[in-house]
Amino acid sequence: QCLQGEPLRARMAVPALTVVTFYTEGEPHDEGLDLRDVVAELRDLLFRHGMTLMAYCPRVLADDAYYRNHCLPTSPDEEEPGMELLPNACKLGYYAWKPLVICKALAELPARAMLLFMDANIRKYPQYKEGLEELPLTCSHLLDNCKADIFVPLEDGIWKRIRNHCKAYTLSLMNADTFNVAYAPCICVNRVLLRRTPQAESIMQDWLNWCSQRQVISPLPNPNPHSLCLFHTPEQAILAILLRKCVLKGELPVGWPFFSYAEGTRVFRLSTLEQWPLPFLERLRRRLRFMLFFIRHACLSVLRRYPTTHPFWKQFPLATVSYLMKFAFRGFLMCFVPLPPDC
Image (cartoon, rainbow, N blue to C red; front, side, top):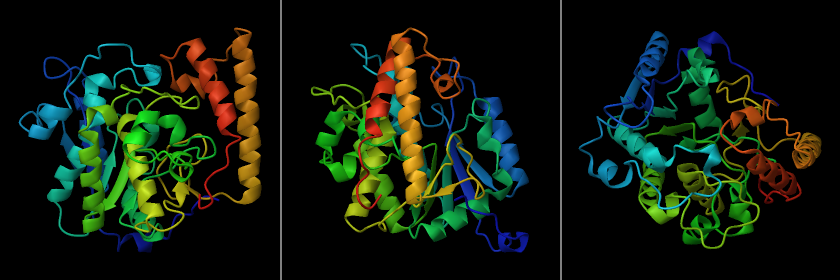
C-alpha cells in the first residue's frame, strides 16, 4: 500500500529541511567524476522549493583529520571479491565520508531541525529529482510516522537482507551474526533522514566510529565468507546493523522503519513509498515472483543466454556474467529464508 499525499494546506506547517550531500570534482582535485554541474543543478532545484543544500567534497574536507585518516582513496593489495557492483568504492574511501558529512551538517543545525542526506548524482539517477517539490512534507511525515528521529528506507526487503549485503567478518566484529540481525531487511542509504536530537546524533557517531575501522568497512579481510553473501556494501551494512540492533534493544520502535521504496524504484515521495511490512498475501506473491525471477535467470546463465539487457541486471553494467549467475542463485536461495518475526 502506497502512502497518499496530503492537502496543500498541510504543507504550510512543515518544518524547514536542510539537505546534505557529498560530491567529487575530478582531476586535479580528486579521483572521482566531475559532479560540480550536477550539484549546482541539485542546489537550484532545492532552492526553488525552499530548501538549503550543504555540499561537501574532498577538497573542502582536506583539513579534516577523520577524512584524512579514513576516507582517502586506497589501492587494495588483492582483488576484492564480489565488488564488481561497487568497483569505485576503494577510490572513495569505502564511503566512510557519509557519516562524517552528516555529523558536520547536524552540528550546524538547531535542535530538532530536519536533515536529509541524499546522493548527489541526479544525472546518473534522474529518479532522485522526482518529488523534490514535496520533500519537506515527505520528510516530516516519515519522521512522525516512524516514531523516531531517524529514518532510512528499506528496499526489496523480501530478498535483500543484511546477510547478503554484508561480509561475514563485519557481522562477527559487530556482534551481529545472529538470525534476528543478519536476516533482517537491509536499508538503502542513498537517503538518511534525521532530526537533530541526542538519539540521532548518537547513532551517527556510532556509525562514524565503526566506519573508521578498516577491517569492518572494507571487503577484506573476510576469512570465512558466507555462501549467501552477494557483496559487501561498506557503510550501508554498518548502519543497517546499528539500526537493527537499536530496534532489538527497544531504542527504535518494533517494525521500524515502517516504509520501503516501492518495488523497482527509488523515488522518495509519499505517493510511491510502501508501508512495511507488506500484507501477508502480497509478501507471499513477491516471494514467489522473486523465486521464479532468480531461478529463471540463473538457469539462463548456465546456458550462456544471460538476460543482461533486463532492467534489473542493467543496474550492474560492470558485473561479469559469471558473477550475475552467482547473484541470481543466491537471490533465489534467500527468498526461502524467512524474515525475523518483527520484520
